[in-house]
Image 1 (cartoon, protein in one colour):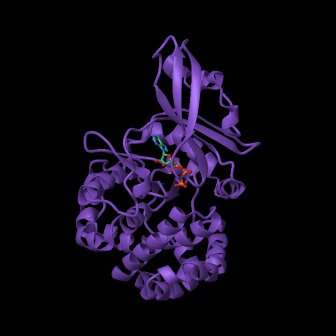
Image 2: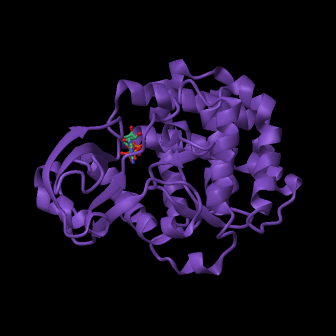
Length: 350
Ligand SMILES: Nc1ncnc2c1ncn2[C@@H]1O[C@H](COP(=O)(O)OP(=O)(O)OP(=O)(O)O)[C@@H](O)[C@H]1O
């Protein structure tokens, strides 16, 4: 099975090879692809599949492949997003209890930097990021975070995965200079939609961004890197399925927790429930043998509240602009800004 460079290369034979583990000697006879969702880093399609013999495999699957839009493809390649998502599905998803779509096949071609993952079609709709999560959705999401972070908490095995990014290396200085460079442009584009106190916060944070990115205290584990409502699909038995593993990394786990609560919960609701969410996360981690105090978790949670601001500033300038994308970046910045202000996170960077 090869990594597809575009959906035009998709054929029944390619699908048969990609589904071989599931369908054995049966064949895919027909495949029809329709574009799916609003992803900005890859092209995603729902596939309707017909088989010989009939009903030999899933009636539909989701294929995610190299973006055709040049800006999205370049951004994904700079961030190694395609390699990371492929390797995550191949090497980590099978070892972790976090709920992800079942991956039928995943390929990354280092020469062409093309990638393709063929996934289970997850029923249901992702939580709307702009509306934000309910209290029940927060509980479910926090449980999935513990199921992602707990099993490989401080595991030396993660350091040997050369493909799994760490953000405190030489990349930190590069990222910090990018944030400083694009900050004025970001303010020109979004300033009218940002609260004045958030603009002030950015003015205090951006000069300290390199310190924030380089100096990353706390234990490390596998993190999702973009753990927010748009990537969470509520499912059966009180679980959430977590999508979009292009930003997986070897990072302090509180980065995901702070980013999730900062981005995906409306501000008043987040203020009400964040302490209990942190306690729930710590309690769920004990189920994976992790001993972490609520105080230590709370301190790291406060410190990493800036992650969403870095993501909004950099993300909004890298991807092709869309109206929904711009709404999302403005909402994100106001929410993460309010979060860092509420938690006085800047005091942890002095
Ligand atoms: N396995 C799946 N089952 C059902 N829907 C899916 C599945 N995987 C992705 N989707 C949907 O396809 C769209 C794009 O998916 P995804 O977020 O993984 O792509 P992306 O290009 O990496 O996005 P982003 O711009 O957020 O990085 C989303 O609407 C998502 O809900």
